[in-house]
Amino acid sequence: MSGSETFLGGAVTVALGLLCLSFLVTVYRVVRGPTLPDRIVALDMLVAVALGFIAVIGIRTGITLYIDVAIALGLVGFLATVAFARFVLSRGSYREKNAAEGETAPSNPEVKL
Amino acid sequence: MQIIFATMSRLFFVLMIGVSLFMLFRGHNEPGGGFIGGLIAALGFALLAMARGVETARRALVVHPVALMGSGLLLAFVSGLPGLLSDRSFLTHWWTEIGSTHLGTATTFDIGVYCVVVGGVLCLVFRLYEGIEQ
Image 1 (spheres, rainbow over the protein chains, first blue to last red):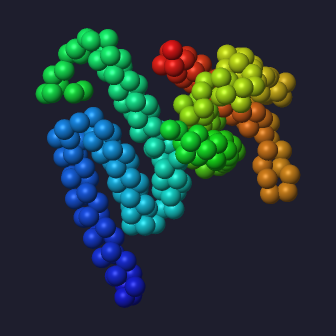
Image 2: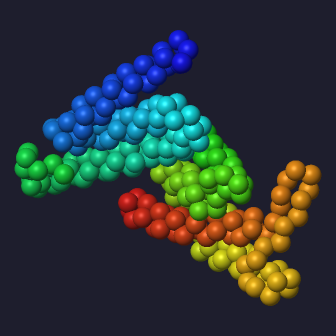
């Protein structure tokens, strides 16, 4: 094995370790994240981490087909985030409307979806 | 408020339709095909509906989703008929070779599947978004 291949193998291993670390940290944010927007951003981040995993595994196995998978995931991965953002927007206006009408929405700080 | 999203949605819409057609035609020899291509195209239309309203997306689709679904089914059915003439078995495809490109009635079947998937998914998605908009 030449020097460059050894370096590439080491870099791939380090990248996999860092991706695992960021995956765990992001999952912690999804589970913990005090508000709904925090969780949505964390889910978007999970898509990015999955993209990184696919790319690194593509390099490791030498199967270039993984790059196509990554491209397709990158194209559609943000849609869930956009839909969630729409949901948060409409929920915010719903709350404002209720507050204007003088109704107190059942606000339980522990249960926020 | 949504200027950036509405502007980028046009770009992404074109990009997704392009990728879906690429997926449709590469499904011949490599991973891909009518189903995946149809899903990506439907997501492109869903993005347009989310960013600029369902009415815009319906106009971009030109035909009604159910009509697209039906014509896709018809196309997929018709693509199986030539096999009845040659081999007396339904869905046995005809193949020709033009240069290095293999062509066959299987592509017609795939295009039919593409139309069915786009129509079916958009049927659902448009009604869903119209419910949200009200």
